[in-house]
Image (cartoon, rainbow, N blue to C red; front, side):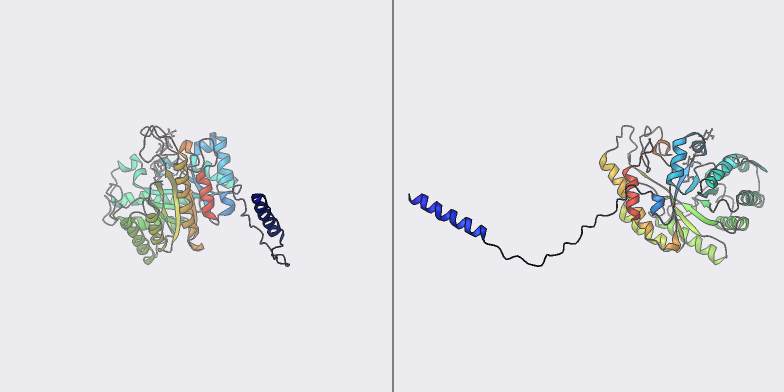
Amino acid sequence: MKRILLLGIILTFIFSSSCKKSPVSTIPVPISPIVIPPVVSNKKLIEVANFKIGAAVKVASLQSDAEFANTVKSEFNQITAEYEMKMNFIWTADNTYDFSKVDYLVDFAQQNSKSVHGHTLLWYQSFPDWLKNAGYDTVAFEGKVKTYIQTVVGRYKGKIVSWDVANEIFNDDGTLRVESQIQGRFKDPIGFVGRCFKYAHDADPAAKLFYNDYNVVLATGKRTAMKNMALRFKNAGVQIDGLGEQFHYRISTSQSQINSGFADLANSGLLIHISEADCKVNVNDSPAYVITDADKQKQSDFFKNIVTLYNALPANQKFAITTWGVTDKSTWLRNSTNGNKEYPLLFDESYIKKPAYAGFLAGLQ
Ligand code: G3I
């Protein structure tokens, strides 16, 4: 009996307390609307970026691979020849030039409202054999190169808006690369390079002129040598507009090293071109490599970081971010060693956007 009485008291207490009206405000508290960030996944890089989004292209792919050409048309607004605009592909013999591939690329760009970045007038790897073996002395050699630059830059005056005048003349420690054509011939190789910048400027005064190299944000000596060369050119009245950092890196590359080196490069005050961006995932070049979601995310984070860095540049230092290729299918990084198991770009073999594309887009926000 007592238990029933106690239960009754307890139930009464519970019921009566739950029925008490807790004091409530009589003025409705406004609830701030939840801000749903705009869905950016359907945005294109070229719709969001306030600088050019470039890609290295193979002319043969533009001509024969419709998906390649259509992806270039819809996703990029600047193109660079991956190899067809190099000296050994154009300058087939003294006074003999093959402009067929370059003409096709420039016409494609004009028909599709793309800019063309010329790569590259001087590169130790692309001097043609006939020139190297011609036995020219230094003066004659420079005379031939001057004619080449005037002919090529002059032909595309107003159509190719920028050039890598010189590519990869320094070692990582800032010393000059030891090779026979530039460093081996000239007592003052940088003086020769400066005159080539002048030959290019005289042939097309409106073109933006760059020096291009790799490992720049990681190699302090190379970066310093580049900045010193640019300063020497400026002080001598030689036109140089920008520095290209190729950005061939990997998911294991230190982000903090990239960030600090990039800041130092930007201190040059020149246009900065991330000129050949790709991000290796198969860091051990293993033929047995299988890409994982974790590696895809690291690659996405890589692109988000470098694009965030680039996007933070002052407007007058922004030029372009160029990826070295369009699709993993035809990246230069696939080879017999890694069994073609490399996936460094923004689009996969089927031209589907990868998490790397989303990372790039996030860096633009
Ligand atoms: O596919 C053609 C073939 O049809 C033709 O018969 C043959 C004639 O030699 O050439 C073949 O093309 C080769 C092309 O790669 C295939 O993509 C070229 O021989 C070969 O020279 C070319 O190599 C290029 C390399 O520079 C040298 O020019 C790579 O594509 C290109 O990715 C690479 O790019 C360099 C940058 O210019 C500078 N920074 C480093 C970067 C990677 O090495």
